[in-house]
Structures are given as C-alpha cells and as structure tokens.
Length: 247
Length: 373
Image (cartoon, rainbow over all chains, first blue to last red; front, side):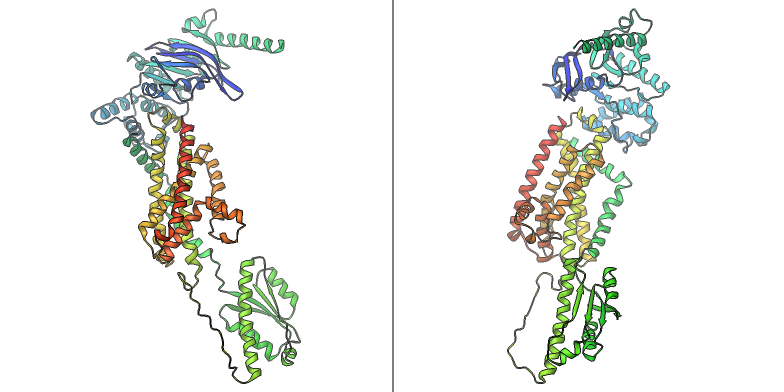
C-alpha cells in the first residue's frame, strides 16, 4: 500500500529525515515510534503529500505521491498532531464542512454522518462547539472528519498524545475496528507501551530508521520494547560520537 | 474548481466571523465610532482663537484695537495682562493661541502719523494653525488701519477699487468635514478589508486547520475565493453603512452615482485583499499579521493625500504615491461625493487603481498558491 524508498528531507542545513525506506502492507496497522524530534511528523507529512521529499520517492497504491498528488490525496486521510478543526464551529458544522469539501451529497451524506457520529459517540454533542469538547472527544471528532471520505489509507500523527488512558484505550479499539474493515493505518506515537498494538514497527531516531519489523522481531534479545529501543539508541549514538571524534 | 466547495468555505467564514463575540462590535460599531471621532477630530478649521493681550499703551487707540479683536467672532481675549513674561508663560502652557503686545508709544506714534509696531506672538509648534491664525490677525489689523486712515482723511476716498467675488465650488463654506469624511470612509474600508482578510487566513494557520485543508481536495484558488468573497461582501456592506452615516450625520452631500462608488470600492478591494493575502503568506501568527498590516497601513495613509497634500511632497515621493491604492480611491470617492463626477472625469484613477489591484492581487495569488503547494 505504501512504499517509502530512500526518502530524505532537509530543511536548509538541518536534515530531518535521512535515507528512510520501509513498506506498509494493505490492511495492516503500522506504527512509527521515536522520541520527539526523531523525524516522525516530517516523514508522515511527506507520505501525506503535504511536503515533497528532498530525494527518494513515496509510492501510495502504485502512484507517486509527488507526481500524482491529487489521486493520492483522494485515497488518504491525515490527522495532524495538533487538533486541526475549527474550535468556533459546532461538531455538526465541522462535519458538514468536511463533507462539503469532499463533495458528499444526498442519502450517502446522511448515511455517513450517522455512521461516523455514532462510532465516535459524538451524537449527543452535535450542537457543542468543537473547542468546548474534552481532549479525547476532540480527537474522536478529528478522526470522524478524517474518515468521512472513507480513505483507504489513514495516517495519524501522535493521535493519543495528551489523551487520558480510558480514551486512549477506546481510541485503540476504534483503530482496530478500522483495520478489521480493511483499512491500512500508519500511526506515530511516542508511547512505547502502545508498541504491542501494531503489526509492524518502524523505530526512528535522529531522522534515521534504527530498526523495523514485527514488535517481536524488534524486541528480540531484549526484555521489552523500551529496553530494546534505549539500547539501540545508545549503540547508535556511541557510534556517531566515535565517527565525529575520528574526524 | 468546484463551486460547492467555495460556497461552503464562504458560509463557514461568515459563521466564524459573526460567531466571534469580539468581531461583532468591530464590524459594526467601530467603523461608526471611528467615523464620528475622526469626523470631529480631523478638522483644520480655525474657529476659535484664544488671545492673551498686554496693553502698555492704555489709550483710546489701543483699546479700540483690542475691541476690534473682541468684536470678531473668531477671537476671544481671555487674558488682559500687565507683564509680557506672563504672556510667554500662557503661550508655553497653551492657555492661549496668540499673544498681542501693544507698546507704550502706540498712541504717540499713531497720532504723529508714524508707523506703530504691535507685537503678535503665535504658537508655531503647529505651523499650519499658526499660519491661519496670523492671517486672521492681519485681517483684523488691516480693518483697523483702514478705519484710522478714513478718520484721518475725513472725506470719502474716491478711488476705483477691486472687489474679489470668491466662490468656492463643491464646498461653499470651506467646511473641512466635507473634505475629510469621505476620506475616512475610504480609510476605514481599507483598514477593515486588510485586517479581516489577513487575519482569517492566518487564523487557519494558527489553529492548525490549514494543515488539515491541505490534504483535502480543496484547490488553492478555491481557498482564495472562499477567503476573499466574504470580505468583499462585508466591506461593501460597511461601505454602504458608513456612507449612509456620513450622509445623514455629517450632512455630506452625495452628488454622484452610488453604483459607481460601489464599483470603485470593488476595484479598490482588489488591492487591499491582495495585500491581505500577501500578509497571510509572510505571517505565522495573528500578532505578526497585525504588525505587518501596520507596515502597509501607515505609508498608505501618509502618501494618500488624506491629510498631507501630495502637491507639497518631493517629486520622487509624488511618483511613489501612484503605488498607493488609497490615493486613487480618495480622488474617486471625493469626486463622487462632493463633485458628482462620473467615469468621464475619473477614468485615469479607475484605470490606475485597476492596474494596481490586478498586479497586486495576481502576485499575491501566485505567492499564496506556491506556499500552499
């Protein structure tokens, strides 16, 4: 579904992502794990066609994300890290707005409205302003607005950041449902305890991919994901330091 | 290009503009308050001159001179003093606008048919006003001189004289409100359309919704239309509201065609909305957008001829004023309000405004599209 080949991105002098390559299979839930500043958001934004890569290419469902941007856009839903809806519009108005942008009309419009309001448990709050919702509800509304055009690939940037444990649990259940319906998901997180939920993991550190594979494969040889990640980061940082001193 | 998406953006923009409780007074009340305030404050008419007088002559002649000031409705002698130093202090503290000192030898010189000096001190820190006050003062003194002459010669002077028959067209009473109020209407339209456009786009950046919009099928040009159409409508509504207020509150005549004025407003808005778009591409936060707005508003105001006559500016700067959309719009709006001129006379301004607006708007649209891609 998603094929990332040797993608690098530099902003002036700073390189945010260096030579990243990985693949996400159709109908799987892939996770991107890394500390803040590891390059997760940059990589996700490149895949979501928002910024072009400096070098390398991204293929979504057989189409290049740069040259066939509009076709790729139509396939995917992207939820930014920050709440990206209008806080001064109500739940209903936000949903209406995105349905109009995607050109949904008639019976299909009301069917989808019912479906996504229902699954996000927002039906009782349709008249409330989005800015007055709780953190967890905001995330669910954002998800409903992203899902409204039924994308085949869903990209979520740290969706559970700052959300309470109960809502987080609920959110993961929704994602599992999405996966069961055949959707491909690519989710970033800084919470290592969420690693077990993924089919595949990509560990990012300082813009480079440290490891990738199933959670079991990434953990192999270490007691848990946290130790696995910390040990790998320490090894890489020591290597980098040696390189620098050798110069 | 899908009209449904544009229409939805416009609808959303209207909901947001009118839902914001802080916006409602800004949109309706503040233009009216500014118009009333500016209408009364921005006036260069000299209607009241406060005078401090020192009469060291204390003779019928000197008293008659001061009486002729008192008899003039513009002058008010507030203080009669003995000490010239006290007069200095009054001028310094701006208790009086003008000081008159009549020296002790005044009567003697007048009677000996010599020239008697009278000192007049004006506060030159506001040079325009001082010049007008001095002109009024010479008028009064001239009148007194003529009477002295007539008393001295005792018979009617038979001499062909020149009588000026002055008619000021378009503003018979030289009321400065007539000049300023249409200008304020133009200025307010510029201010609000600039601020609203740039703020509306930067707000989307600040709240992160721009990021969400970029991944939707929404095209940059649809976005631009969705962000400018609401403010064209709002600015036109404000134009009508403020113009009606100018007509009925300040009794400014509206001699020309209202549809022509609205057409001119649309062409003018092309420039201001273009600059608003441009500002939104260089600002990340609403504060930055606000500061950048002033970077444009202040020079536009100064170079427009609103307060400072363009003819008095250095030649280079006079050329520069052609880049100021407010300058052209001011000529048009004053022409339509006060003179009732039509397109036959105002076409150079319309043309310049249209070219300026077209270039600015096209440039801003290109930059905006590039930023979004």
